[in-house]
Image 1: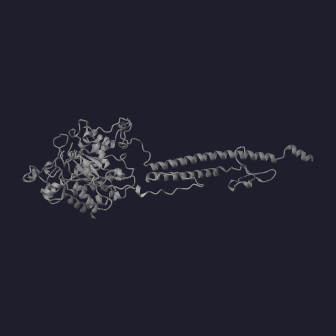
Image 2: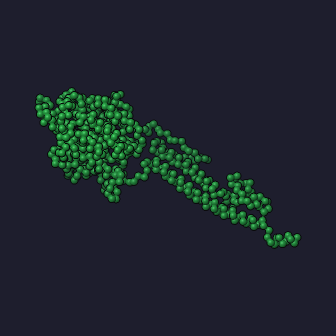
Image 3: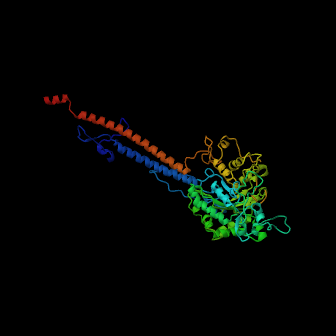
Length: 582
């Protein structure tokens, strides 16, 4: 009673689990004495405390996780649970059918979306740098559109290799810069008499690819196209031949299946294997000049090439992706002609030999500098099944007064389109030197300020390095209010000119342009689970400690009371003397 505990009138009044005998009998009644009406041995006290705490934490944890799931998956507000006589575990929340968003056409059949933000929330710009597209290979280092150039681009870390496809006279697609081979080959030396005008009244003439068979084209050698700069090596001119699309597919397949596993890149969760980013050149000209449908030739190659079907159509990797994984689309098709892209999209979604129900190649509409200035451009794009736009980078480096720059990127985001700009080159003659000293500074502006999703780069190593460096903290943390300084070609040709930093200046993991903080958990749900488990363990530890202290205190009381009772039941010397006298 002195300690706030209600004593029982007798041992029989105690609940059975609480009856513990001390081995000491009462001096008058002779009944065994209970050590304490509320005492248990230390092991039982600790077990009882732990069981109670774990039960309460489990119920609370389930309730918390249920509220979390309901918050993120349902539009129904979470209501507090009504008090009941006994705790109840809420049933799993149901998701209303109206809460599921309707996917745009270019996302409905694509498990490897071009824009990673369409993937689960675990995949964001925070862990996925902008894509690097090896423009015609590694064109700065090796002559463009050669197998050696494509292979080098892959070794330097390109997410895609990008061939420009043109048909031969016998219907084979080859990779070459233009329909006119004189720009990048020695065709004028091997076939000097084969030059012709496009038409009788045309001023334009050349050595057109579709006038030559594949066997004839294989006699040619490739040279560096950019000739007016001493920054590019000439040592590789005349060493390589023009590759066919089939040869490029073989190279890409071997790289993904054989080379990547040997360099530790076979199990990457983000980006994964490299892909093909193909451009179909001048479809209208080829149709008018030679009656060739380049889109049909490409589709025929996809059907008959086993390696192309394995990489681009069946796509087992995309079908088996987990929530925290992202693979770049294995195949992307680009063109300046929107009608050609619409035709390709229709064929990939309706032709049974091309459509497997899990992957439709993303279509990218290329835009010249003139296209970007067209006020009706976005109205036309809205009607197309395209996943991205590929603007001349000059469209992004103009003042907002001309309706370009940041406004262009914002408009693309409103239409849920990725932005892949072309083309970044190292030479200063291709850089906006009025604002940027180097190509790296220009790239950082495009990645961090304008937040584009990818870049066509001839210096693949530079683009990969800038992407991995991410965006410096100080640009966002100092609160300087930078929104991207947006002040400051020929149609049909792409020829125009965050890992956060550690204290030592090295990159420490991509952090993206929007977030500069350490993430301890991969998702909010995981964070809730880990905090709940930690709280339960901490509570159990505190409960066990209190139970241990209470048991020690009760043991001490039991010992003292038992000793007192034994003293009362033993006769004193005076009582023995009186008995003897009696």
